Image 1: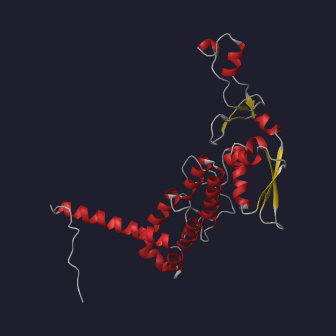
Image 2: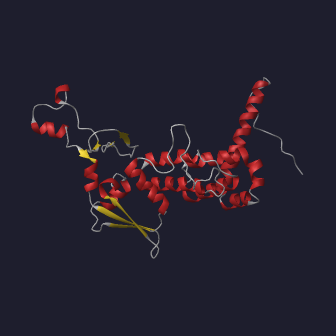
Image 3: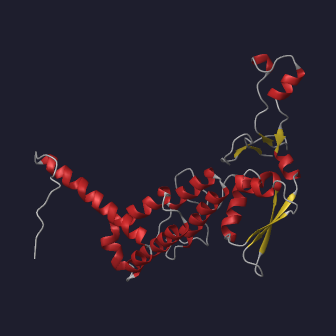
Length: 276
């Protein structure tokens, strides 16, 4: 049976390493240094401090079950997860520790995003997984081209949930999957609207690629979106500003390159303004 090794001493939830083995024991973390190799001394107390008891995956599975009520009251879906795994998220650790109830209400949380988070907790991945050849796994339900933006939104919602829960490794994973989705202009605009309505203006990790995408292609894609691009700019001025900034920065770089190629110095900033 496969072994799953997770390092419980790290704050982040990294990928789960699957290894073939003969035993059913699933290890989590390292057991510490071998005293014979310069590890703990002869003092039993020092040995126990330097070599904490090995935590197994079974220990996680023995931890209490926590109910997660997803969605608004009246239409909630209840999911169940082991407390030992949930508390690997700083947000859950803070909200579970000392709580008198084993139920947590998450009325504003997306069900699919939470299910992806739980899948990641238990396996180190979530569907669609990243394959070794740099593409995403697919099945009969996954269109080759994301026309509606559903695939982009799935990973974007996992990204914002991972941000809330403090799971940086999942945040990075979901962001990397966004760039592996083949999508239409309409889907990209749907994705951009979600990004600018659910992330902070300081989150350049996810916002900058959006502005770059539209800054490079807006002269073509805005015609394909049938006025939706204009509506997006009016609805989210920060989006319009970021796209414009990208276009102006790119033009400034091109001007500097042309000036250098022509043997001219830096362009003058002062210009005579036309009057009248």
